[in-house]
Length: 186
Length: 113
Image (cartoon, chains in turn red, blue):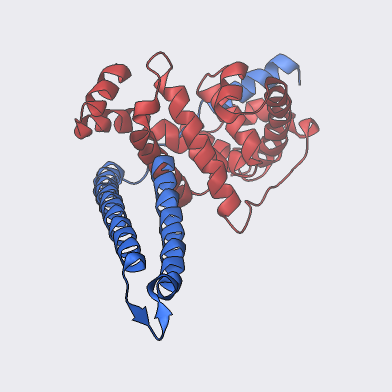
């Protein structure tokens, strides 16, 4: 379906680009937010990525997947924004895997909104590369090779980052579930 | 906690990691930004074309004047025409190099954007 709209845009039907915006803006926002950790900056990143995609649409090869091509632009813009930001996102490296005893049970005790807030809180405390890889691997369902293609990192590097990210996520979620998000304490 | 349980918890957590674009007017702002950039790009391309046109016109005119002046028989402050126009010819060459460098720089910027 994307190809049809891309062809239309290339023919000069600018308005058909709205289809791609509507389809990918939420996913793109989640990915951008996992890198820049700030809603306003994430919006700027997504906007700039869409504009770049529009301006370079003619260089998009029809046999490729638009989503992967667009994500490359998006991730590039997101890390550019991180480099431009004067203050790097503050990272909290809480305990490691040892802190996650009973985490599963506590997690199940939360309602959906709280679960979402917990995950966003945890991701916002992680290093950009780690939260991005988690987002792409678990939520977007991208494979290691695709993530390597999107980010420009080697497959080995992606695997290492993913491994570290899993440990750090659990290390952050564990203490959070015992304190701020503990359903028993509230 | 076993590895499978960890993996299961991570999957459960990450399934809830999505966020919707919170800015409702995002699409409209983005489309109007695209229109604005297209307009400014269009006028940028027009300006470059005009610059090339006047550059070529000016260069041709300068070459013509320079050759006519050096072949004429007038004298200026006692100097023959060939010597009198030399500073202007040097100035012309310097201007020519300066302008063509600027135009190529703009062209490179245009193809890179």
